[in-house]
Length: 238
Image (cartoon, rainbow, N blue to C red; front, side, top):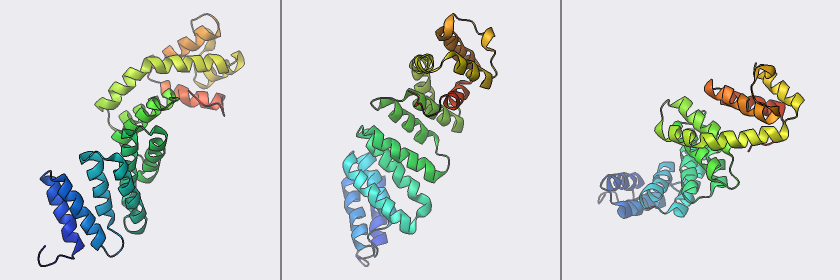
């Protein structure tokens, strides 16, 4: 460092070393020095790591978003394949600030850029859909299931999905009972290869309830959601 005080990469490496020693404030100074000395307004990884430091270490979520935004700008120029990392960090910070709608947008962008997403990302996206006002319990359930598709047994997603199940079935039942007439309900059963007349239950409400239970025990609730969107296009699920 003494021989090459203006060599930005040394300041970046110094910050990495300081983070391993849990010297968070010193690392923040070193990252900023690396950015100031960089020939093109800061290296992507300096901005990204600085965002992570403020997000996960210093717990200054608003500042971390500023750094992730700069990382997104630099990624477009030099690290296109890693742009999703900055969006993911931004999403995590927004979620911690309880800005759930904006966090949802950032998680969606992360998944778009990543290709398929990853278990934590889908779990956190589901949590945002569940926590936002008004909530979207059906979308939250889908996200938790997607997380488990990518990592079977992922504990956080498993616990969240199981805890949500009762409320999910309640709002789905209310939604179907309110929006499906008898003819559309018969069509839904046809698409699901379920014999309407064999469903127990009295009246449409009772048969809707039994259809949900029938598909739950067969682990086909996601298939139900898919076909509901087909039968009720343009009507947003709760």
